[in-house]
Length: 462
Image (cartoon, rainbow, N blue to C red; front, side, top):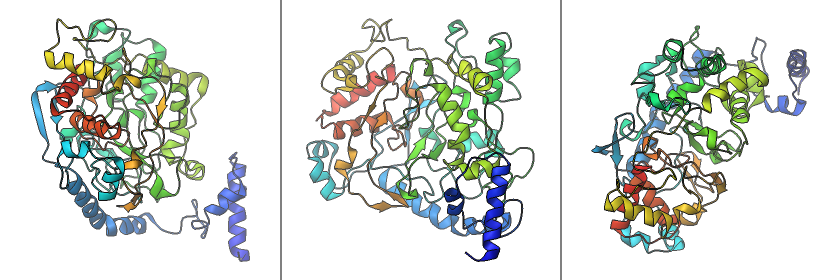
């Protein structure tokens, strides 16, 4: 390191420490590629130069990802108008995964080693649309309502037919008599008080306000390496930009705690419904309270787990005793949607269920072994499980992502599951039918076509 470079490097360290940042010299040294010029952020390139570099590769990378999706899935998604999400949107139906030279029945009778050797597993890990870049990415249906969420460098990849309602219903544990409080509206900072005043207590109102307040994030902020054209007062993201109406729009990201980049998992936004009965948060981190997760998201996940970038871009450190507490107090009254065919134990009321749904419940509790991880009434065991899906595919780099081990994943509740496509932590199963096919393979269940149909019918009841 020459003297000029050392002086600048030392100046950055002094600046961070003077600002109260607790950062090691080793971490600063890792940022050497950006510590090479004077300026408020020590960035070597301007916003225009960074944008030009990203735009130069956008079309090529978008085509590669589109080709991958087209090879894996039939994206001409069909829907079932007779089966709807709680907000009224028709359910997507499948399976959508494409098979190579085999039928589902033939595939189900093959061993994991045979499927792996032939390279015909239909549900390997799903890469981010530009896996080398990553970051928060929002579907067009949300961007139409909130244009401040546009990224110039990468577009969302999955069709709207396999996403949740654009304005998901909101159900409150404290006021079940109200039904859907949202009534087709997306809750924002501009309308939340009018809608919830008189329904929530003051702490809950303040918690909701914070969940709807924009804060800086890795791609949406005022620095020259942002991924938005905006440099005005509309910068930043809110919790409910991804968790729309306390549910999800399946905005996608990369998990923050894995390196190198190609081993990071794509992760789709989970629903916040029913967090009051959950004991683990995050797909793999196993945070123990929703307060922990709320604070973690702002401090680290918003900035890809990089504390240097968080300090640079304006991390919002929430106050645990009031702000985090208030946000959690609102989230913990978000309820699952009504399930009129379930009794008080969360099981099917046979007087209301169809024969197919009754058979599906018997499979769920028996041959399909779903109950091992998803017991009633909320259909989660609040634990983590490793399905070892890597038995079925080879570890190789595909579209910038290493097809490697998923590891242990949190058991997500299945209550209201029809409202939350696509499925699995990375969205690789676009429909409930895809999900049944996936588990039929990884659990080696050898379900018949009728059994798969019955199991799907039951899942729609939850």
